[in-house]
Image (cartoon, rainbow, N blue to C red; front, top):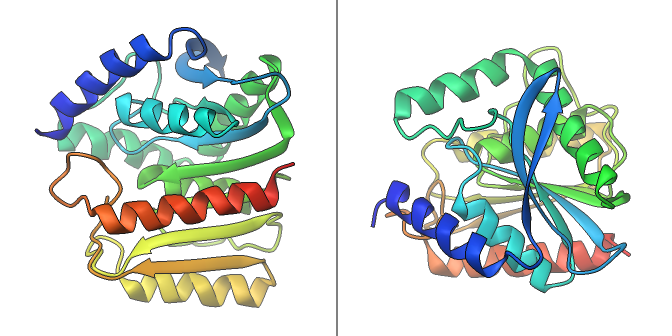
Length: 246
């Protein structure tokens, strides 16, 4: 099953199963409409801000949000592309991610706007971790560099390069990098370079690689999905959340 049909199926299944607790949230940032997904298993649950891959907020992120809710976490799955913008063609995916890579301040505003939206719905933003997949992993590191005070930042097979003129001098909260050693899109030299940056900046961090895991190794149904790496990285993610969130 390809990613498009899998995502559509997940949207239907998980919106159906999660209707009692999770819900679509329409919100605005800079006067533009965005459509996220919020789920909270109980009042005052620790919060995870979840950032999507380069195809926008789809059933994949909804499934991950529901998995986290079952563990007791509130989750706001943010939308960084805009209401109804869920690109399927590679050219469109590159366009939407490229626009945000070229406008880092906008990327930051979108994530901070998502946090504000989560807070307005009872999300505990003072007791929160941000996590993202692929493009979302790169976005989470952008949020960390902004200096926002969260408990931690987690990147699953995300982009690791630091843009020119940026550094981690203002970063707060521990950074967890979960990466595939066989990732051709983001090679190990970039992984090592980030490790040196974080060490130089004195930022608490942990970086793990999974042998044989390619880019997008956690994405169910993808040809590059690797069950062992997905299982191990999810287990470490759960441990990290338990360590950081009250």
